[in-house]
Length: 194
Ligand SMILES: CC(C)(COP(=O)(O)OP(=O)(O)OC[C@H]1O[C@@H](n2cnc3c(N)ncnc32)[C@H](O)[C@@H]1OP(=O)(O)O)[C@@H](O)C(=O)NCCC(=O)NCCS
Image (cartoon, rainbow, N blue to C red; front, side):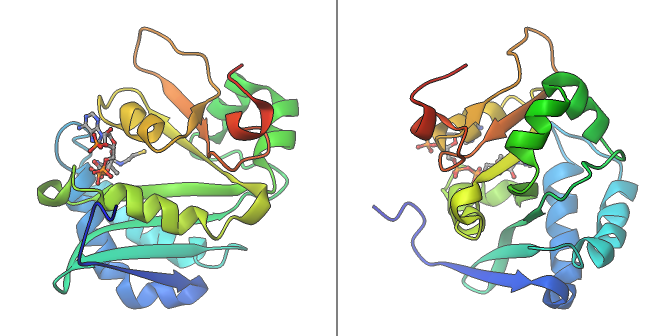
């Protein structure tokens, strides 16, 4: 069943994303500079700046979702290359998973960087549609992403989408790494959780 009828999804590869950079930045601000994330507005400006270099990454793709011509969400992704990055929160991922699992599970697969639905459009299937469209570009290598358990909505959302958490589940807010259903180390291929 189509959970989100009338949704127009469009993909932007490489530098083409810069045509919609302002739209993505507005959606980023609406989704993340509000509860529960409460990021300061400067983070949206930083996201806009990152887009220019992120668009050059191998496998870069953005997907936008519009309803009746109004943008309601977007996602961005690219292929994780070797060596594994050491900026942003990547060192935390290596610390959680260990270098061997980073190499075999994350490098070479598709990394979902941002996924955002404007507050008024959340809970209507837009995020699911964006994630499915983005991961369709991953092929057999599958996809992975990093999120934080500080938001009460993200872990239930990714689980509902069939994603599999590979970081230890803790009682306290922490980072969580998920693999897509199609990932070679995901439950669909390995038959269960670790
Ligand atoms: C997280 C987010 C991308 C999900 O997108 P969405 O369009 O709201 O989600 P969907 O409507 O596709 O939900 C799919 C499933 O996720 C789960 N889910 C979504 N929102 C939920 C919530 N608030 N609480 C619990 N479960 C939730 C449900 O199981 C839902 O399925 P159901 O409607 O059949 O019950 C969106 O809410 C968002 O942009 N939030 C702010 C930014 C953010 O957190 N981005 C992700 C950072 S990693």
